[in-house]
Length: 263
Ligand SMILES: C[S@@+](CC[C@H](N)C(=O)[O-])C[C@H]1O[C@@H](n2cnc3c(N)ncnc32)[C@H](O)[C@@H]1O
Image 1: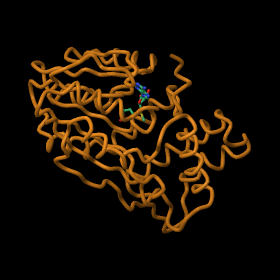
Image 2: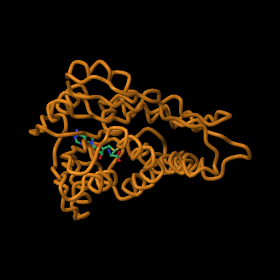
Image 3: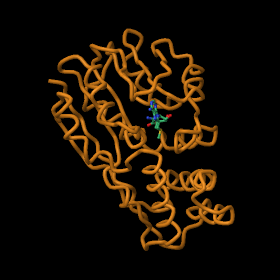
């Protein structure tokens, strides 16, 4: 498997960005795990674990008597996951389009993955198969990526956002994949027990600002690498959120939190 096939890339600058993203989102993730009652002794599947920032949190939640099975396709991210040396984490290099070969898990976690897989409904089915009856699946996936806007709107950011969405679609994904989740979950034998919208209006003084800022920095380079923008456009996009105009605000892209239980 070639890491380059994954539209966001898997280089070290992407690992760094995922780390920053994790710091910004960590509170909400832990809150979702609390509501899903993920706890000590449980067996939890981290689906598309990336370099393992959330995996490490899950490992600490389930403790030495529990187990986290981290599924990830990118060999580079798999190395990062393994180098964490977490005793209660089993790392498997695996394409989640294929059956997981797992059953009886107490819970699963899946964030910002389904937008990038060509057959997300199949992945949701595999998640269902991996859970025991009563097992809980937690998702954080985009439902309305076009909500990501600067206030007032900025043409360069609007162009960046459109090209990002285009690049995800053209690589076989769907940015607003959460819109289909209720249907796929029902088909996979899971009932939704809780939903919420995760979106904010932020200013450059908020730590959350660093998340889209970093995404534009790595994303502009990636868009050029993939042939969506000219080299001359990269710099202006990459630094757009570094020094926003006085009074700028931003609406973050809308994430749907969906917690479902296997029947
Ligand atoms: C945006 S990252 C999110 C990583 C992690 N879930 C998080 O929230 O930090 C998407 C991850 O999905 C992985 N991925 C994409 N397609 C995959 C597939 N078919 N099988 C397994 N992992 C995949 C990528 O390699 C990447 O690690």
